[in-house]
Length: 202
Ligand SMILES: [Zn+2]
Image (cartoon, rainbow, N blue to C red; front, side, top):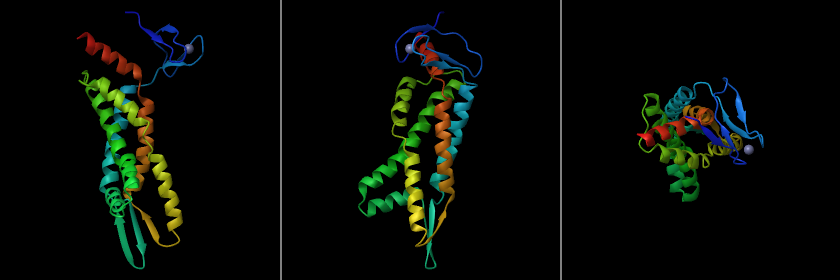
């Protein structure tokens, strides 16, 4: 069957043709990117999503920071940090930290696994279209790197007053930022469209 794609920018229709590995198809009128050939997009996205899930679990099971001051050591995890913010009545900040460090990355990872795990075994998830829309919406709220930057600034400022020891969680969290970015970059939207079409025809 002939496959057509409309340019995202100028709506010109193009015929979809197989591309050589690693190349990009451009719109013949405005030059914007129509689609790319990605190497093993399914396996790569899935591997990155699984790695991300492991990092997410690590980031939430180990101490984020330990503060040593006057012979006392206090370790906090991400969750206990959020609880502490809530206790100090900084509810808006607590909510923001909860959303950027826990809810958004978890939703993103779950949506990725929900879409791509069944695809790997030749099935299509029941609510794939919804999960895909959710993934695009949630990604706009992904601000983990902003949170990480805020932590770094706080660390530099605090380092004069107490000894700060970053925990396993900090490293897992930093790695998760890169893994999630790579996962979202490795997605081939064409895979989604093809699977949706297949499920509609059934
Ligand atoms: Zn165009």
